[in-house]
Image 1 (cartoon, helix red, strand yellow):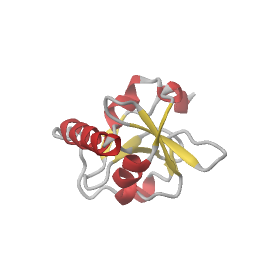
Image 2: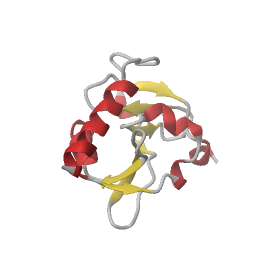
Image 3: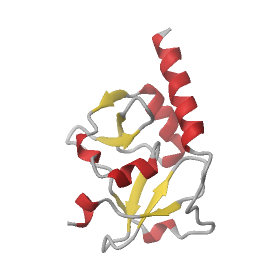
Length: 124
């Protein structure tokens, strides 16, 4: 029953957070953004910003289309490494940057990538 409730919360947050696609860019060349900025760990997981329930560890090899399913099955993670408020603009997604870290995009499964500011801790 707890798993069903968590899926319901994640789904509700996902829908609520994604109703406005401000900054979405059609036909964006995502290959120009090769660097995933979400922090990772040595155990092969990556931290993504979730909804009201916080952050999640997901396997680093999960492609963007499979991200929501991975979040649904994930364990909660500390949001400490995602403290820059910019991370809030990419809930349930991954942040990718250009090689020089001058520009970032948010990639969310089923959505057009959207332009966003790069997190400060990445551009230091």
